[in-house]
Amino acid sequence: MQTRALETLVRILQVQSFSEAAQLQNMTLSALSMQMKALEAELDAELFDRSFRPPRLTPLGRKVAEQAKGVISGVAELHELANAGAGLSGSFKLGFIQSASARILPKFVTLVGEREPRATFRYSSNLSEVLTEQVVQGQLDAAIVTRVEGAAQGVHADLIASEPMALAVPVALAQLDAVQLSQQVPFIHFRPSTGIGKLIAASLGAEVPPQNTLVLDSIEACMECVKEGVGYTVLPLPDIRRYADGRVHVVEGAMEGLTRDLVMLTRDDAQAERWRPRLLSLVRDAA
Image (cartoon, rainbow, N blue to C red):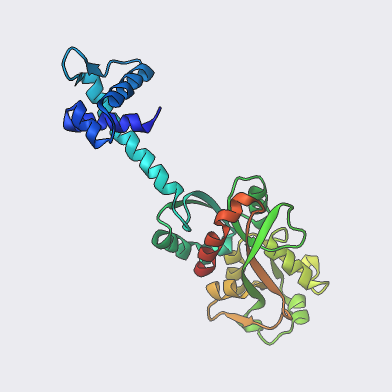
């Protein structure tokens, strides 16, 4: 169905005249008449009472013309959406790891509202490996995760921030070195299967025997245990600072340059290339 015919129908409703409508639509009266007959045939409905000269809209014709206004408006919105220029347009699904959702997501939502009015987002939070697989499968358009070695094939990774790893120790144990700490209290290990967890596991070597390790799946829980003197932990410095208080001693240079790279993952295809730079800019600004 041609929207041009619907526009003409709406015009006839507005001016109540075939001849005037033809002039406004830049058509001949004959062309307008043929266009309306074709529309009636397509809808299999009598839109005009031709016992009158000129024809008049039937009650059904008036109703169809009123409904056509919404169709025309909707088509105009689609054209505007599709021609949004450099901005983001459409509905995006974006995933965050827990620490990134706490620190980046609130600002990101604000920036989207200010800069990208044509874009809508649905958000989810999960572990890095889960989010990576969801990007691979097309269940997410993008995900903010910790970079790990051996990333999935067909995935593009853009660096958002490189964050130093640091040591968080109960303040009462601040004078102990790493070996002494491992002998006296448990090491609180953020879930080893996660991106952060793999970095931590690789950095520890054999200094912390397994029997002295407490595994938790929440950064906040790790830090709460440090505050209570249960043990010590290694985490990205921004996350330590987020939860630390006077009960925590932070050793920033203890991990010898070890960093956590926070990256945005997208599928490595032509479709993602169209909107990836704009989305990446938003995420980096939010971070």
